[in-house]
Image (cartoon, rainbow, N blue to C red):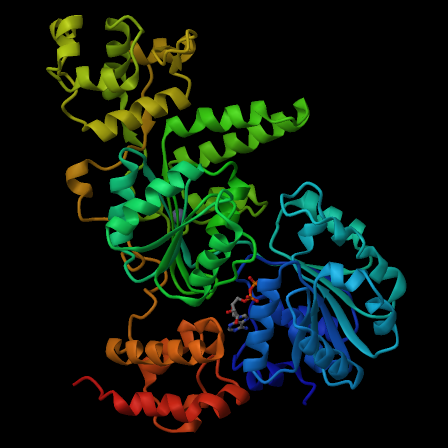
Length: 609
Ligand code: ADP
Ligand code: ZN
């Protein structure tokens, strides 16, 4: 095997160029240096240690926290002709014996191990006698006690620095939080290691937020734009997960519920269907998370607010790992906030930690209510002060920010005042829209001057306005806890009522305009839809062929070929192996095992006229 990284990238993985900081990381580790790699999900962390593993003599040992992750990585590497194996509790005794033989005989390029397996028993002793290329510690944030993925065994990995001081160690994580970074460095003895920090931007993910009015109907309308795509829908509670999953199934989606209340077998079956299938939608609580490295998740939808902006970033980051366009879609409404606040208050964290959690929630609410580019807010929160608007979020794509809402806001405040500060937004909106309900009549609210003066906005816009007036302190909930709205800060309210200040707020478009304009993966600016120029008939045939290959080998389809590769084939229609070899994701081994079969599929589908 050649030792040139560029050549390995081309021959083994079938890629033409390194991405972002990959090239310098690979060069550094190949030269024997240790590294901490911080890169977003989908950034391409695996190649940062896989290529040095192939360029350096000896076996690379990769510590990975989840069996499913190891299996997928080993499966994908073997498809690419790399000698890889895993040691963990799900391997048969025969497989373990074979792995030992290969390891001892110097026939393994990469060995994946769980931390338990590495640290218990005599594996460390045995490794000490073998030539080792490097240690890679994947998902290195598992060492952090702050994070929710904390794994106590990761702490013991400190032993690697002591026992194997001459072997390069490379720790990798998609967690951007500075505190977690510092903890990784301290606990894994990486003080001397080079730190490689990639941008945490995920430019192929489109961020789309919507005011929550009728979550079920809104979700179904969104999913209509995503038919046939794999995706995740996050909801707050088990009960809501079940409800939404049922509704999606009734609407003809291949949807599955996933939450901690389900039996372990049911959960692993759901995970398996999601990994191996295409077009499967998992409706889940946050219990569904780590270990999902499916690259072709096309959307992540939140029907309830996540608990922080970090959580939002992590959860939405599961979309579009393959770099093709994907959507992060979220409904938000003020009713989401009180349960999240209660959750923090009721936890047994100390007061300082609770204040931090409340602050994190505030950042999320600020993001949701923002009238400037979502991505800029997200990235600045992650410590990247970016200067330009992204052109691929709802704010950038549907600019109506800063609409002057001074008059409607005064009407809203008048409605609060005239009705005595005892009513919630729903009733106030009814009054402003001139509703003739029994309640309005019995209260005499149809006799008020504010009755029916608000026809310029529709119900959804009024609700949003009330929410935003609350978020900005113009209105507050009455102290009796019954949800009535009252005037907030006098210094805000008075000048507005007197007409001394003006107010600009971004409102959702009117429902009439909104209908049929749901944002899908391909609508408007941003990266192209996944298969813009591919011949759809050929692409479908290639996918069917891939599914069959994957089934026969018990592998997820993307391990055979990524969507990106099939799309490139369907665009270029290669007729000879030579042309096929030039396509992204087709290295020497895949060309040999699948080349002829792929050409046959292309040949069987006549080109469109
Ligand atoms: P991470 O572990 O950082 O989430 P992966 O290592 O799984 O990301 O890589 C994400 C996807 O990008 C994978 O499908 C991988 O094959 C692909 N990829 C990584 N590096 C490159 C590259 N240089 N060129 C093309 N595709 C790449
Ligand atoms: Zn934007």
